[in-house]
Length: 212
Ligand SMILES: Cc1cc2nc3c(=O)[nH]c(=O)nc-3n(C[C@H](O)[C@H](O)[C@H](O)COP(=O)(O)O)c2cc1C
Image 1 (cartoon, rainbow, N blue to C red):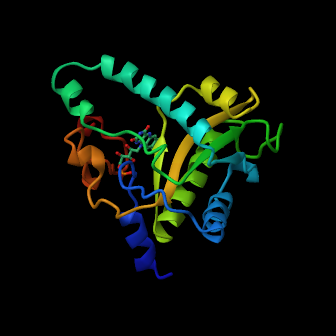
Image 2: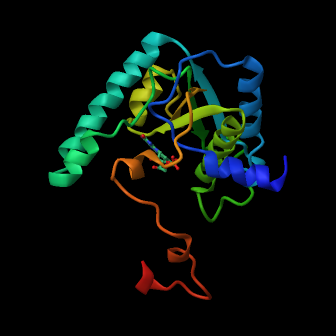
């Protein structure tokens, strides 16, 4: 791929909720996007992630019901225009996507001496997020959509998927073919929030608090 191709994929990547077709995913493609995730950088080469692939309808229905309940919890915290705007926003594609991929974090992997983590115990979590981003970009390059669902309580997903207590579920990714990818992020299209320009977050020589 050319560098232009990479930037094109970065620009086309979207969080997908409503555009899943539910069509099958080629197992070879699924393997490639998982390989991309597993190739991500990780603190001390710890590769602290696992990927749980979920096709079962009942499992997905149970997770969907939990996410809908958590959506209501968040909705109840809103008032006025925020409540009205949120009402119109779809926050998941759990049942419409082809497959769910739950990405977990194992803090004990490659331990106890994880090179580079002694000053910042969050570095393992950052590694998992990089694996997710690799998967997201690879899926985009393959013409698949991905939607990150975070409206869940970790103990619920641990119990649903037999995840041991020491291992944290970080994301449920809705994955599958899509009709198309939106050009504009959903939250922007629905008036929830617009992305800030790059110039507002780049600082020179020191952190300029007057701009935050
Ligand atoms: C850590 C994380 C958690 C997210 N959780 C959700 C979620 O629960 N539901 C949802 O609809 N989108 C979720 N998103 C997607 C963001 O809303 C989305 O990335 C953002 O609005 C920018 O849109 P884009 O990804 O299409 O560029 C999440 C994204 C990240 C990085």
